Length: 96
Figure 1 (spheres, helix red, strand yellow):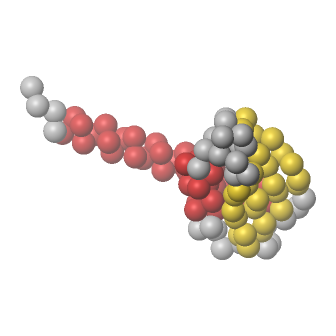
Figure 2 (spheres, helix red, strand yellow):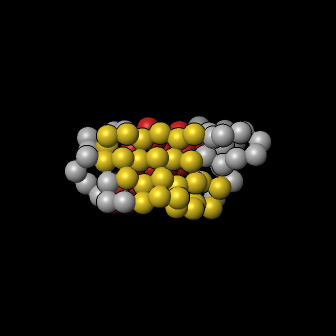
């Protein structure tokens, strides 16, 4: 994954997520939309074989880069929680 900032202001950021398809930007968009200060979060892929997703985030009251960082941290925490629960489920159901 290679992020590249296209535009950035206090309440809006647009960046390209190089090397990604729909999975990561869609999860990021959904996580961003959980935040009440997010006015808009969406992404576009011009051509699925030739282009990378471009995500746009616009916030109402909070700085866009702070909201973005918090969403990424939330995604990471959820991933860690899932990993722990999955590992425990495998251990609980391990048949010898």
